[in-house]
Length: 62
Image (cartoon, rainbow, N blue to C red; front, side, top):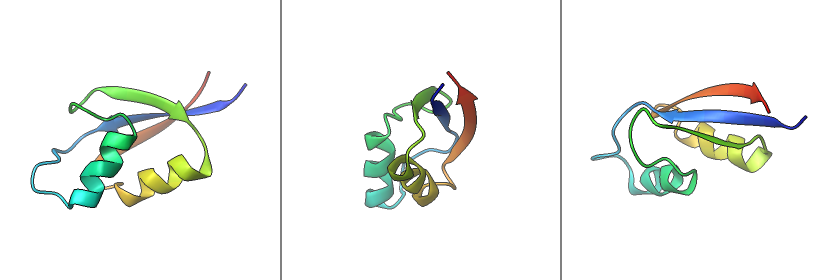
């Protein structure tokens, strides 16, 4: 099965770098503490690494 990532926004986007705000929105993160499940691709990993101080990530098999 394909690997997926469960990403949860753990810190507010208010006052953060605009590019990081757009990255979070592109990942589908809208509200805090609401997880989203996305495919584990190099592009997704790069986006998560850019905002790693705002999110928590968990690998899941689905």
